[in-house]
Image (cartoon, rainbow, N blue to C red):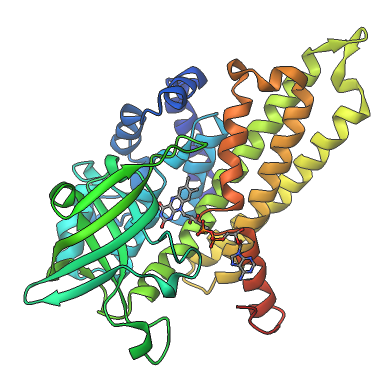
Length: 385
Ligand SMILES: Cc1cc2nc3c(=O)[nH]c(=O)nc-3n(C[C@H](O)[C@H](O)[C@H](O)COP(=O)(O)OP(=O)(O)OC[C@H]3O[C@@H](n4cnc5c(N)ncnc54)[C@H](O)[C@@H]3O)c2cc1C
């Protein structure tokens, strides 16, 4: 079957699944800070979160283009892909850097829904974006490592069985390069929580299930080292391009949601005896948001195609994420303005989506860091930090 028809079929099927979980479902979860367990289970059982897992490990062996279609459609329907997106890109890290034994151990169970791999632990409270300066350590002791330190803003830890995390195995001052000396691990959260790992949920602006993690001599078996010891930065970096492109697709979904919703409202809401959509002051911001969304979408597709072809796509992945996040934010702003006072009513769902889409200016990487990447890599300007 042709790629576009597969993508179209995926969109239709995801939209049909999302229709059973209407916007009130997401509004209630947001109010209660609940997790959409049944939605995520159904997404896994329907095969949508497993599109990137090769067929030999029980997945459907499709590419990032198809994975983007899944996440974009979830967000376009008013749902929140942030509840489940990590299953896609964290799995990619295991696929690319895991040993054959690790792939056999985890991937078929992730594909079938027996195991949830929804957590990725990098950010720390005192280092922020300066990842190579992270303070969490892993010390080898015979057949295992002892992990000590702290992480912050780690999403879905309480709704995942596994977490891929980064810790320093050699002190930074003993390494030739600051990017060396860190290692990636697969942590089995079922064993770890309350057994060397304590988890503190963060009361946050959006329902993202983010937590603070405290590692106190957490024992992780040697066989859970992912990739080579000391090369963990490279391991997590490889997963980050996929993450940026997938998040870009979610932003495109948000932008479409805002634009479709606002256009419908502008056609139907009458003030001064005519639809507000007949005013250019209402039309133009929506038309502009539409054009920005389409342009950003081209960059998301370009980055995903390069990724699927196995080509370098660092700049495209970063630009896709930044342009799509800007497009969704602009579209959200235009939709809020179009709805006037009703934009603030939770019943209209816009305010939730507006809060949710704001995240993507900051996470998984903030706009400034993307701009410095482009300045350095594409324009040859001096590194600014
Ligand atoms: C809801 C939520 C969920 C998250 N989930 C996860 C997760 O699952 N796993 C995970 O590892 N992390 C997660 N994060 C963390 C997220 O990736 C970071 O918050 C993000 O990368 C920014 O890091 P920081 O918060 O430490 O900001 P900081 O690094 O403290 O930066 C603060 C501001 O300063 C700017 N800045 C910093 N340095 C420079 C510079 N040199 N030049 C210009 N500007 C600069 C940044 O752009 C930013 O705007 C999550 C965050 C949130 C809010």
